Each structure stands twice: as C-alpha cells, then as structure tokens.
Image (cartoon, rainbow, N blue to C red; front, top):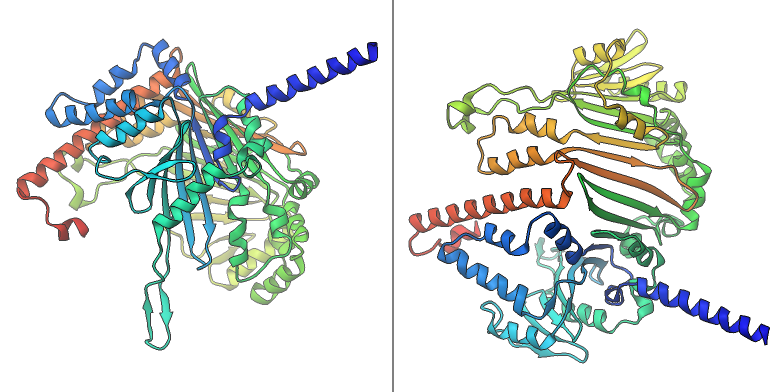
Length: 576
C-alpha cells in the first residue's frame, strides 16, 4: 500500500512539473517556425501597468501625438478603432519573427511577421469591413484561417485566437544572356502564392516543427521581463550550400546555436540580460581555449577627463587555431597564406596577445561645410571630432615582426629604429606606432605621446571599473556627454528631440562573462538621468517628443508639396 501511495504521489508530482513547464510556454510559440532567425517579443500589458504607475495613461499619450486639426482627428479615430473595437487582445504578448531562406532559384527570400492575440475574431472581421484601407479587399478562406491581401507580398491572416500580419520579399537577380550579351530580369515571382504557403505553414505546422519545442526559447520566459529577444543560427544554414567553397564541418559548428535576451524597464535604468547557448561542438572548442579577463591597465592612463566610449576585450588567440582545426582547414589556410603573403595562420593569430582596448573622448561637431551654413549660428566654428586610442599588446614577437615587415615591403609602413609607423598618415586615424610591446593607433601624435607617457589618470567612474573586473568583454558609453557635444549647436528639425534625449540618458554599461562550458552570459544597462522614475516612463516622454517632431515635419513637407503642386506631386517626381 505504501509503495502504491509513493508511486501515486510521484506521478502527481511529475504531472505537476510537466504542467508547470507547459504553462511557461507561450501559446503563440506553436505558430513560430523552428527556422525563424530572429524573434522579438513585447509584453504591452506589463509595460502599460508601469506607465500607469508613473502617471501616464495610453489615452494621454495618444492625445499628445495626435493634435486637434481635422487630419489628425481622422487618423486618431482610425487608430482608436483598431485599438478598442477590432477584437485584438492588447493584454497578450506581441511577437515579431523573421525568417529567411535560399530558394531554388538561388535567390534569398525574407519573411517578417507580427503575431498577436484576438479576443473576438468576429469583431476583427467587422473591423476589416469598415476600415478605410481594408474594406474594398475581399476576405478569403483557407482551411484553418481567414486572410486578405492588402498589397502584393503582404497578408493579414487570423483564426479564432491569433492574428498574423506578414510581409514577404523575394529578391531576384538579373540573369546574363550570353547570346544577347546582356543581362535580363530574373524569372517572375508570385509573391502572393509564396506568402500564402508561408502563412499556411504557421497555422498548420506541428508543435514539434515550432519554437515551442526549442528549450532555449521557452526557458527564456521563465524570467519576467518587458521584452524578449531570440536568435537562431539555423536560419542561415541553408545558405551554406550555396557557398562556392564548401568548408568541412562548418554546419556542425554553426547549427543549434541560440541567443536569448530579456529587457526590463527598472527604476532609473533599462536592463538587458543576454545568454549565448552553443552546441556541443562549438562549446568544446570555447572551453578548451578559454580567454582571460580584460586588462584594465590599458585604459587607466588615457589623457582626458571627457571620455565618451570605452571598449575592452580579452580572448585566447589560440581559439582561432582551434576553430581552424575543428573545421579541418588549418592546412589549407596555411598553404593559401604562404602562397599569397608568405605567412602562416599561426603568425597571424599569435602576433597579438588577445587583449584590446579602444578609448574615444572629446567628441563634438566638426566644422560645417560652406554649402550647409544657413545662418549666423551655423557659421560658428565647431569643435574638432575628438580623440582616440586603440591598443593591442603584442603576443609572439617574431610573428608580429613578420607581419610588420610585410607592411614595410608593401610600402604601407616604414621602420624607424625599433618601431613601425605609417608611411603616409591617414586623414582620420592618422597616427600608428608598433613596436615589440604594443600596436597603437591614435587620432594624433599628441594624444599618442600623452597616452604612452602614462602620467595622466583617466576620468573613469570607479563603479564602472569595478563592474569590468573579471569580465572577458567590457563597454562604456557616456551618452549624455556625447549628445552634449553633438547637440549644443544643433539647428535641425529634430532639435527638440535631441535636447530631450540629452536630458533622458546618462550612460550605458555592458559586460560579458567567461564561457561557463555551456553558455556565455552578458548584460547591458542604460542608466537614466532621472534615477527615481521608472525608465519606461522616462523613455516614453522622449519617444513621444520624437513622434511629435516627426509628425510636425511630415505635415510641413505635405504643406510644401501642396503649395508647389496644387494638383498633386507628379508621379515622375515621386518615382525619382
């Protein structure tokens, strides 16, 4: 009896676990094919709740965007009809997914779909019959869904529960006719037939053929977030067959690699967390050639107190050799390199240690070209574009010297004492110096000399440097300082939006962790100027200002067209 009871309890517990796992899977997942390369997800209900807590309602937002003239009133009425009376369930998640494939004619096709939920399919059908843009288009019936085709290559399809809006494109290449000695257009493509086939697949595919069966995708929703992202390396596997040169085991290395990310609007910041899942083959290579942590000493003596961008990375250069071995092309690569430039692949990847850093500072507007000057304010001299340092410590000195000597042979470099320099400095990144310790590219010789003297202390926040410790990749972007340099003298149509952006964003911090054997995690954080308000509320104010600027500018352009062409803009002008 006890054994029977234990068995029953075990079955109940297992059933509970399975049901819990299934409940975690969004119902929309079964409509998204396994080969979708990119999926973006938004939770409008959760975002709306955050806005309301911040004192912003959807109605007030819409009222700000749409003004009170007759044209705006008409557009607002159409928008409200879709939002409130079309039977669409705006409380459910919205999915955007993109697929691409190589067709039989060797041309690529791209399909983008937006997937949402319906509360009342009858109401949506009624909406299509009264909407100004859809009412003259006949609704057609398929076995499992209804659809209409508002434009070539565009379909709106729905069943009782879901609605999918899809756009499909098929790129055709011109074909060379050797007899006529000229290019001819490729064979015509029936876009509507192709899109119907694609959408039919969404509504009829088995669960096993959808992302509902991909663990990396479904596990992503265990974390509560406002938005999600998923990428899939399998989306471009078919394109490998079209490569003129087939690389052994390349598909084994590329298939079944997934990236997931969550986006959350928190108080005073936007947080994104990312995980890269690699297949067993790629995982074994990454684990064998694990990289070190970033070297912070590379940026600590940068000579400026106005740093705009920091970027550091650290990797094991032997990883490149490991990948070549896994692909079974190391010998071929060495033969080709020896014939072309007299170097081996080992010379190339061993030349540098694997630590790299970029620092950019003092960014600002350059001088305005004479033809672009419109008033006294824009005639003022602007600041130079900024300063920059790129540094990569040398790894194997002999290999590095071989590469530099090749640059001398080609006339690109010249050797001065023990250092290599550009023979003819470039206009943008004008100063390069390479010796047996470092490869350095600077914006100018003054910045280079000050950096190499190591007497300055870079003005980098201690909390930022603390976050960088132990990471294999690190990134910092001072958004406010950079925007200030580019917007202080701005006179453009979107000046209001640029000023709002400067008042909205503070900075951005990104880091990536070491590979843990199965996956690599990364995080990004955008910090806002207002540290006490939810970042979505802060961001919404900015987006609203941009939307207003765009509508005002579009209205001005329409009014200008109407004055210049009272009868409408001639078709030939619109075409050109």
